[in-house]
Length: 68
Length: 408
Image (cartoon, rainbow over all chains, first blue to last red; front, side, top):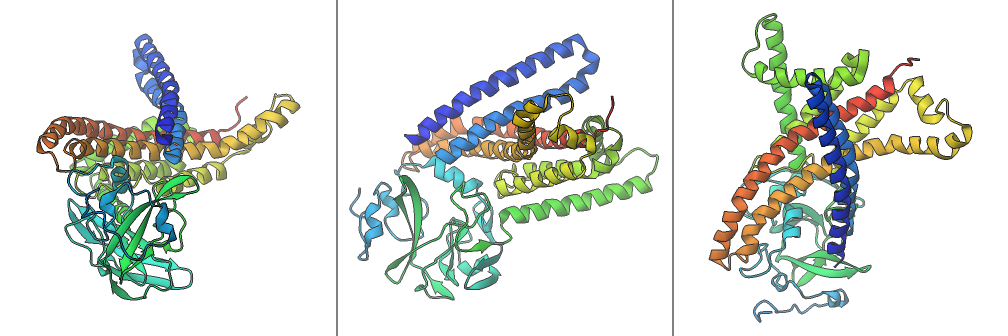
């Protein structure tokens, strides 16, 4: 049952990352709607921020790999 | 437990008593790597086997031998081709011979540390896999059978700390493995392509790009204009070669690993590869750090000294290492997770079909698995570009922060 508990922990971590990336995406869409001419800059920064948020979830994946 | 499969060997020793006896089909010594029809499908082990590095290059079911360079303390260096192991050309990469106490099991080189095993070219009777209890965890240990005895095999030698069943073992494997060969192929391909493009720019100066040149120009310009120029400031030209090398190397290997039935080399999903890429970024960032950068890391101006000493400076110093660490993990986890999901979807066929025991289940598995796999492969194609882009943009932003000049 160790594996399934690790998977549960990973799922909890993904909730956090999901909320984070969702916020990044939502705000980026709003910003693009307000200022469509800045779409290039916003897109690059959106991907950068999403990648940084994702880092926390990735560490959870690695931990679940190691524990499982 | 069928009687035919439950036969035991005469030389059971104390170590075998901990054997859990779950996987009955593994109880017989032999080269029958594929489990018997009707047995339970182990999706985790199959996925981990296919994303791991191997000492053979497999195109579809065909196994191609690769050069082997191994070193073991005490017995020295060994150079030979992995065809010395006499593995089946169409099969699962189990070597029928041992060479200088090295064996090939499921495509990976393992070593027999037992000195009583004869050196040189030896024909084996087969392999046997057992599940043993070790420090409270269940581990899978392989044995080679020769002359009525079972010889314990060392795990394969990997640099990823044994995340996928390898680790630091009694020997060092410097072989040209599947991943190394893939890297050499991608390196050679890009060397050839970019030399041609450079030549085309010299010869066709001022004219519109043509052929392969017009394919790479938008990609190159995208990274230059969206990554290098905004993040690196005035000195972008100095760091452009590094950013471009990172981007194209990662992109090429991501896409190379996506080709179905063509080795599926999981190079950028190998922790050792992404570690080296991250270490390069760490050194380029910190060696080009200006006074402004180090001042903000070590003694942030405008913050009370107590807070700096207790929290800020330790956190900033930790941050120096966390940045490349997450770079390493991000690429590794994204590519590995993608490969595992694809393999799990393909594995649905074997799970529903009970390893060939149920034809109707197999057909049902195919109906579910094929659309899901195609969907996942399309996503992975996108991820291959995004991860290469993200690695480049993060490396550029770290370097950009380090070379930033003071502007008050």
